[in-house]
Length: 441
Image (cartoon, rainbow, N blue to C red; front, side, top):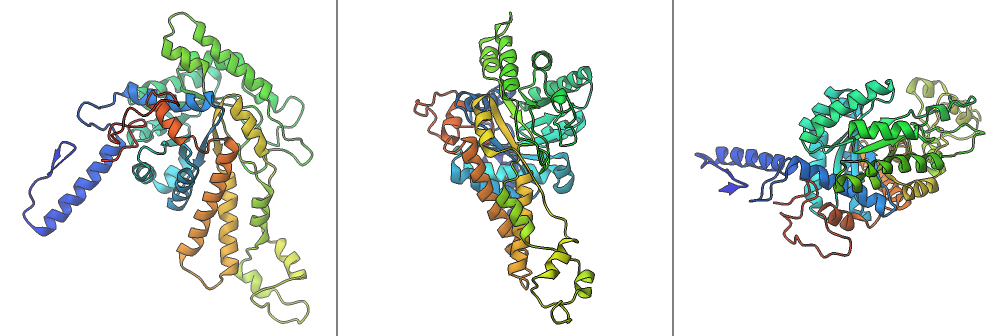
């Protein structure tokens, strides 16, 4: 039997037959993730990169942002994949260097590839390295089959950031991989002294020079967001510098008028995609859910007594004991970016929005809630399942705010070079490829 040009050898025993079939399946999956050849339809690295750029440009032209959700394990992955399917939204799943260390790059890429196979050509999905800080980290992710990488040299001096980013871009583009870079620093609540936050924001002139010299495909900019649950102080008004975003967008678009720029480059510069990091909104319902259920160490529990009877605590407690327990329970706090600001940011050229902390709060609260309501259920499928379902709900909610709901089909057509109102020319699922990825054999 021949599968994609790979001939399966005749086995000599039932066991060998099963093992050979298993190896063939694994090889087939690898091919579906890498350069796939269907007759004459092999994609060059340039074609792969072009398709990825097109979906970002589609987001910019249509005023929505692609949701980029961090994952660390299967439950998180399945939660966001289901959301993309339910909402008919394009999706970027991303793994930080910490996630790669925790789960392993091959596991993370494999989970994304399974999702792509299940989605077929219906839902564009990319697996992305979030905040790669070295060339080696980016290269490892690219070599493992990653679709895009972020090289974060934002803490380096400008010239060193340019050099590092250019090194990653050169290697990535040879492999058809999309590159996101970062310029400016995300400010935190500690940067509230005069000039503190805005002194860290992205400078439009530097952004123009940076994009021109590095050739990065998208740029993460600093306009007021920060990582973590708490992005603004208690008395600080949540605010994003949209005027600066407009100036950066205008500066990059000016590159389209420079001599020697191709028509494709002009289109790219005029619809250049920007990225918003640290965009969790820390909504009150998630924070309240995380804080509603308390976790108390067993030794402390054993020392506590019912204040009304003087006896050991029962399985449930109320009253003064809760106040005592709260002193020993770390509470989740947050004041994030108001969700309506996402929508405005997307309308001004933000094509990718990163969300992580809101999912952490959701998972944390859901697991605590399940364990509190089901104290005798030890099957991990129970509490992990609750966490997965909460992730799906939050992911769909964010897709609505980012206006990416219902954009999957149009984004897929754009990736194939078709206009939104054009009927698909590639009715064969083997030919209708988003990047080199969403392929069903």
